[in-house]
Length: 405
Image (tube, rainbow, N blue to C red):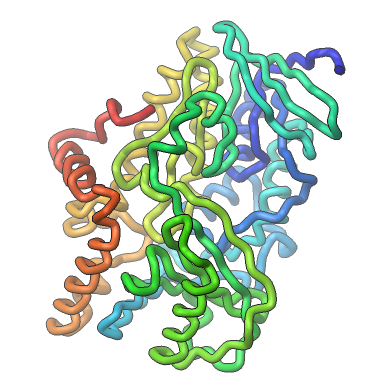
């Protein structure tokens, strides 16, 4: 085994949240090593449709996006919601079009621009927090590796090994979903290729979407883990043809992964323990249309800032992080808050305005369809938790920290 490497911070996962955290740490002069289990650049399952907020963050922190980090079409104008009543609502993003990221190359570009030292093909295997430092265990090419760091940041996605190392039982405490997408050659597709399309239809699954990419059409479905992917996907494809006139060749490739939908709905985030911070989707951040890149970037940056701030003020890093991350919790959980949706503008596309542009009869149908769609989640008993969080937000500046792990 090689001698233990001593650094200031170890980040697990070469994600966008890792890049944002690393940028803050490196800019502050801290020696930072990023561990990534795959060879870089690595494939990343993602729609790639970035929000305006995420786009601004990338430009401000990493510079203009090069063409090679984008899919075709290279941009997206907004989102279109579709309902079982056949009402559709088209909404443009505030601030104009946003990029369509090719995550394999955009993540690699960002992590390189961060200035951190990256150890790819290196799998995190465990950690030990000793109070004044953390020992991280890893493996590369069968060889055991050790790192000694003041802090560790887990930016390793929804199935986070860092969380499993801290809280082995946590994955059993939340519902898990399978999210899969298949890529089809297009025969005929009336869906506007300038938009990301989402269906609020309980018969299609918990999360159903479609958009154009590199001359093909993505058909994506999300459902409780354990259901049959091919059957679910086939049902969606038939629905698209019957109701929207979308005719597609059989899929050419497919991909899928497990997702931790739910924490941001009910304000149950995981931020770590001691000198170990958790950020990005690993912590539970996810926007309402399933876009997690913008909140991953911002929460990742906050984790890096918290490390710097805690060192400057000689304060516990976990205390500092939880205080600083509260702003991102407010922004993300507000997107799921029914009171915020009804009376304010928590999203980056104007849902209330789009709803009010509809005739009264169609508005009524949309509200009915939304209610029926939400009943799909009844078994997870999130309704009361969402309402409880909404009431707390109404009475205060944020959401209760007692729900955080």
